[in-house]
Length: 333
Image 1 (cartoon, rainbow, N blue to C red):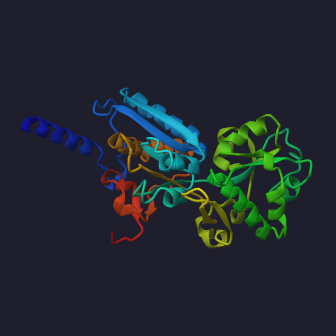
Image 2 (spheres, rainbow, N blue to C red):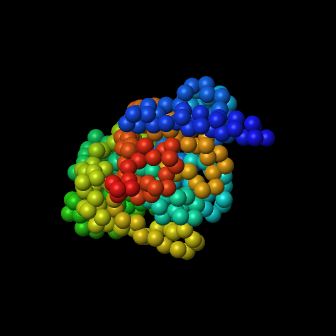
Image 3 (cartoon, helix red, strand yellow):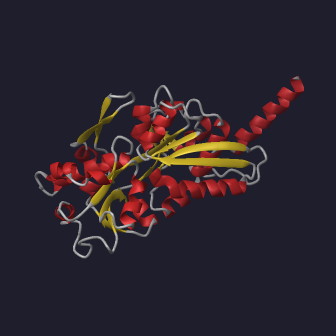
């Protein structure tokens, strides 16, 4: 029995050695064909991450034939509630807004949050959209509010992109001096609200709507036309966090009927391993691959800038094998 324990201990030490960050954290790829990696990994992720996460999963499974990965895409808040309310098994949770993990999962269902990517809001359309030849980054508020023009957005109670659509319009009212713009937005085209941002693509492709509020990365991935909005509106620029914080929105909280207030902030994605993850070691192995050079390349090719390592106020709770991908908020940690 003692010999078996020693063998298991040495195997685990070998696995930890394999996962060492290397000098400066740059040597992060998991070795191909490692027989220690096997089993099923369950990933819940934001709809906007569907393409890059699939590419990373496919690549990882090619390297590790005994690994199977099952992914479920949904609005980030819906992903969190599958874990917190429905107790569905999940090994990794990717959120389009790191604050979803903070607000809905920590401390009962997760203990840490690692920020890894950014994005920005855009007004997305195609060549068949009404006024497609006329719309620009200055006149889009007037065009979208025209009676004959239809636009879609996602539900802020299930999807951060829906919250950010509200923030984009609120900030536009301030930035462009369009008094009453947000009130018009609230009452228009309510039947085109969908659970998550990628559900809006079908509405646009079928001509059901002319425009959608969507992440720039998703527009690029699908070859769609989009307006690049000013930084004061698009929630991209970290240096404008105080400007963005002028706006806020009440959304559903952790419990039915409970409300939380979300405040405008620069767009930052987050990830975590839930407290009851069935396959924690495999989750760590996958995240070391995803957060390393291979994942960075995949993300940036899909239009999402990587920000690894980024500060984390839960740095001390991050697994040791992943700490090289984050920075402590307090440099003394």
